[in-house]
Length: 266
Image 1 (cartoon, rainbow, N blue to C red):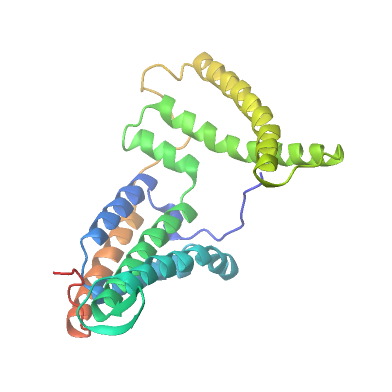
Image 2: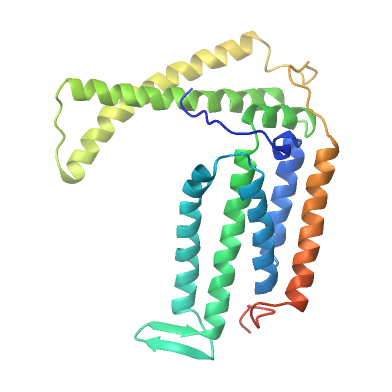
């Protein structure tokens, strides 16, 4: 497989995937309603501890994955800092108007986006897609025909990437020269898209026939190769967030970094 990475399995990998998915979703909803800048910064630190210490991936890979996070933080926060509203002006030049309120609000938006991204990556790095879909079938009663279809689609992605590489090598061997500008882009798009699309349609048809032959369209009463259940690690995962979120809130109240209890502009 093309996209296999070596990593150390930690306790996060052993948590029930459905439980992890629901909890991460609820945490994201909760973050939307946090307007205290100090609280959300502490919240981010609690999530970063999971990302840096318990995903089981090497530090270099984690730092590489962090690059888009930093770009996301900078782009989302600076736009609000430079052009946001506020009364306490710090700097003004042309359209750029930095105020105390816009600075805190921009920082808050950047941190919020960072938390969304880190939570999603923690889930992705510690959850095997096969276990996730088996758990969705067993705990959340997802119909097998949908779950196995998604699993098959995930397994097809590396094959499609390999086909694209083969296509590129074949065109290179033929000595094909592309035009420049938009016309060259259209020509390249046509040379790649039509063969890849036709192969994908054939493969999807064969897959559908195979699934129907094995009665994947039938009733939900099936046996499963992987038995997914709950364990004490799920409780540990829940307690981790309860304890750290409570501690983050108390630290934000008694030891604030910034005088911004509510960044909303009134």
